[in-house]
Image 1 (cartoon, rainbow, N blue to C red):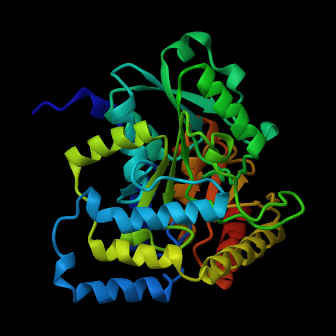
Image 2 (cartoon, rainbow, N blue to C red; image 1 turned 30 degrees about the horizontal axis):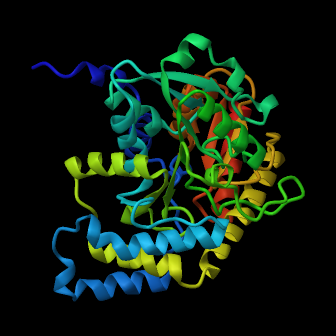
Length: 395
């Protein structure tokens, strides 16, 4: 049996690899503390759950849901965006409902790239961004992110020959896995660069609300790419309710941006799927339009966990900068593990049951780091740090 050559690019996956390692640890009798996957353990807002529950008794919600049936959700998304960022959005032409934002970032390359075209991606970066490019038979140029540059790419480092064959750039700030925040001035540079080079500018924006007030950032929310491109000339932005509203399992998100890009993505989507169950969109509408106190509680919960875990790591001698955003801690590995993040993670879970994500799984520039997801209560995070300290002492 022969398969498409595009599958050759789908090798090891950081989440799949760690899933196997966790299964082996459990089979060996370890009790696992899973800090490898950014799946929130916090509850979904009561009003969202109630809206979904009410929908279940309404038989009119049971059928296929086409584009026009998502109008109320698109209107809620446009209103939410206008309130948050002060930019007006046309829900009819500039918003598209998605089955999670990952659906959008994976499918958009099919609408933008021809075989052999380049996409400019962050390295390290979220793995599905690369997956979408490979599905479109495109090529990837990794824009290396380094601590000394605030984990922001340097556009001038992109070779002219690569740039001439590039069709899109993908950014994502606050950034997974490095936790970096991009200032609006950087987005303005990115918009100008993409306008000058005829590039589609994609911004994956799942951590819009997960910014911790601090003297360093001074931010209450992260900037949107459309604040730098209010005319929506080259840009499209992807949102999800997985993080701010703890609705990861419901798989609900949306795209906002350039109407031509929205229409192109809509064509791809129409060929692949309809939409999710209408009741889920009803829950999402309730989340977006209802009280936002739950979002503030979520942010404060992750801030407390961040402080607890960074302090606990410091107590075992692992000094890690305190992240200004996201639900992660991005930590540079100590010796002797500095250049073998995969081995560190697999041996750590085998010996202690603590599962974390190897930096190399997010791209070659992530080697030498690991990512901790703060998806456990403070006491469990402290226990994890204690176990990690014993592992390091014995290695």
